Length: 391
Image 1 (cartoon, rainbow, N blue to C red):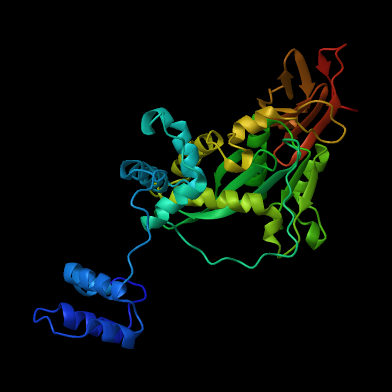
Image 2: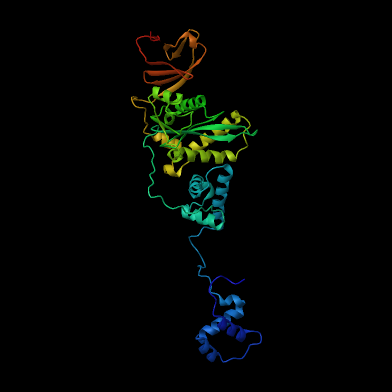
């Protein structure tokens, strides 16, 4: 098959073929060249090319260099393709940036020490040549685009949920909390639905791990917020009692919670590669595995740090009026109606005996909930061991 390109003039090609053909047609070459307005040197050049390679000789040769010193050898291209396949099969991001970070982590194992690591452009070129580069139409640039990220960890948490279908086709919800600054997955909890009780329980799980945030951003689901409907949800009221400022996105603007939406995509892509969970407990095991793995994977957006490393760098924000991090704990209420907090006993009332109290402590300031009810908000008096209820 002839190569792509511009071939010679048809009359010129016919004259060359007639002269160089097996019968060797006799002709006046000089007169033919004058009629075709070409030089005899050019004519005889194409005669030699036609005799050597046939019709292909009428097409221009490739201008590709005979050697490309900077091009990756085939075996190193295979390494990039292998890493892409491993990341894709595991359910992680498998773009050029992700491949570059995984390659850097395994450089001693996979890459010759004398060669530089490939750039993002090189990786994309290799994937494109192998037909593995997913191409999307270029979007029209927006006139105004503002990327925001808080400078302090725990300054803003983004909270939302997404649906998941169990093996028996029951639809449940995954409640997902992320930190705006570090992009740490603070909590991923399997729940029956996006209800107030599970929303609060998920928030408490995150606080027990990372402390109390200054603000929480949610959408307008009734389990999170009622402000756009003219009322306050139990979750918003409890945040207010802890000094945390609740924020709700405008209706129809999911981009406000963009980091959380992007985090959902990563989890969903990973879950799609795992066996379908049959129960909430199995789903929770999968989510715990993912959360730990993701929080310790390097992230291009974080300049190559893992989300956990970025969180640990700080600085740490606290709610307004607080001067140090808040710690959360759960305590059973004794039959006398009190709980023990270190060497301190705090009275809650006998009606709460046998229940579990959720305790938020910031220094000597203690806020205690039992389910949805705020039962104590006090400053510990260290001059007495027992802290009685207010009369």
